[in-house]
Amino acid sequence: MPDEQKPRKPEADQKSGLPENQVNLSIKVPESLRRHWVAEAKRSGTTITAVVIEALKERFGEPIVPDNS
Image: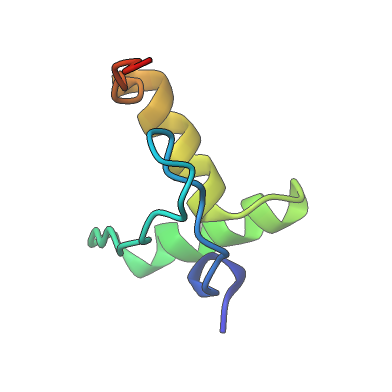
């Protein structure tokens, strides 16, 4: 199983501190691009998943969780 498809430990929910369920985000890309990106990510010591998450956070940010204290 490629690294970017291996299940990860759930990240903590910012609001409750409990693990948040992980879901799949699928996109269709040409196979040649996928092969290239996976190879480049591996050569850089990262995964496609990490790169995509970083790009999405940079572009759209993360949800703001109100402080209920």
